[in-house]
Image (cartoon, rainbow, N blue to C red; front, side, top):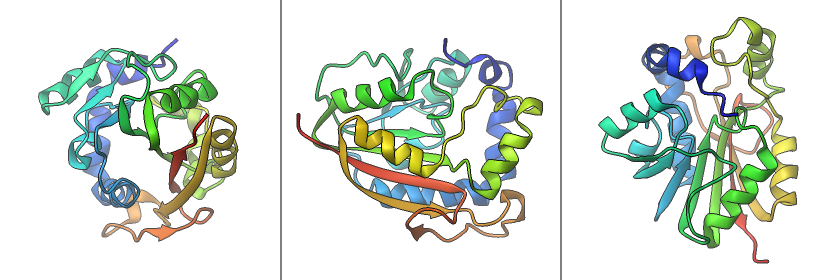
Length: 212
């Protein structure tokens, strides 16, 4: 079952986070832009309100939350009512697939990655952005999960777990970036983006589709 209730009931709070934590948002966006300099024909899985798709040049996405999808459409984006595990697109339809803070909310991450692989063109790229479970922010989110409107049902993963599952589902060479090295509310400006994983709270991985 799609975990959409909190996002439908608290859409305004979701949008407010980006305003209250603008420097963290800009940090995440900068890391994603390094991983996805040209999305080509891109798809965002879990497009939400379009906060990432729009500035990254992605025009289409899937989103099971009706209220979030409405806001994304108001930003001029095409949104299909679907989930990551069942993408309603033909094989090899996209040059890139983007998943930002989506992997902790899907029911079956392995199936989600396999679906991304299926709809990607040969040599296409899957770009995932997420909070590392072992980072300072990841530990805080897990500690407060039961009191959180959005993270009560989330499944946080480490970057090592994500890399292992990408390898299992047909993705090969990868590049990693990281950002947000202090609590988001303490950022007086967008944080730096570094290559690699393991120090920053927000991780971005770009993985290439391997042939059958």
